[in-house]
Length: 373
Ligand code: ADP
Ligand code: MG
Image (cartoon, rainbow, N blue to C red; front, side, top):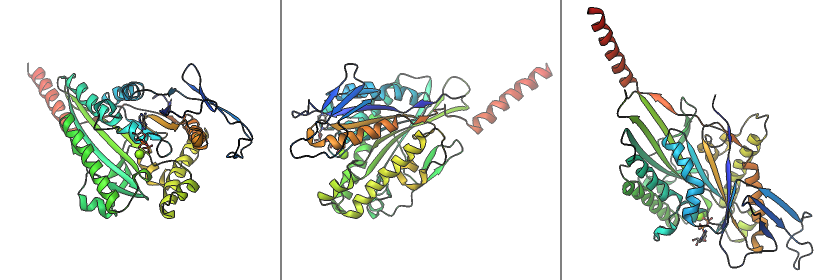
């Protein structure tokens, strides 16, 4: 039986010179956060009764480099993906907290590359070190905006029309797949990176032409691996995929609204994150009744990652300035709920029917030879 594992939750802080030391403290073991909001603060920005909060997570990454984030978050998960297990890494948090910096990074500065380019590079390095296996690498890139899925690697006019008919279907193994989605084969690190940039370009063209705000959409970059042995009889094929997700800003409606976003847009973003939250709450409830995946595109796309066949990690990005303390508490609460979600990652093996027939033919031939001897 496959083992169940809880979703790993890591907190990452955005560096600041204005760190609210009296309000946010991290424990020495780098797993705990203590928040203290003194009562009767001048200006009274808090009307909450509670003054102290304590949270525990798998790890706190406070003022750390992109390399450390990769090592702590992606490295071991990717090892599983290369061996045939699905993986998902998602970045959650309010706009400006560092989700895109964490996932994509500053591409013009090599040191500041984020998890996606580092993962791509690691995948091809590992493949190079496993000559006994033959790998096929594919990538896809989706943006979910106002409950519309955009195929960022599809044709540009289609991406801009925003009326794609992409649908999520479940395959025989229960894995969620987006029907009709463009998947590009990448034979090298450079090629895979060029698809990442192609998707980013499509996204920014759409952003300008359609006057959209990218922090209000969810982006999912997926790497699919297919591998088989070059040495043994090769009917066994391993499949796995790694979703790298940059979620929309988690700030509440009232705040978003004051910055002049259209109400329709703000409603959609909050709605899809609310649906994500509802799925998490339903999953965290051990009685596990109906899980409302179908309520939104995002939860439908990520259904393996949420209570399914996947190793999942969430990076919650927070800001440490006093002004953002309420959003930070809300992010930490969501992260706490996420830690209660368990998944059951399984090895994704399939048997290639043609290779299987060839193998049986060989065996029959051998048996016949034995009989005639
Ligand atoms: P989000 O995607 O959550 O809205 P961004 O990733 O765009 O936030 O980050 C907002 C700004 O803060 C960007 O200019 C980004 O470069 C910077 N930033 C975020 N996190 C870090 C970090 N860990 N180190 C340095 N700069 C960061
Ligand atoms: Mg962003």
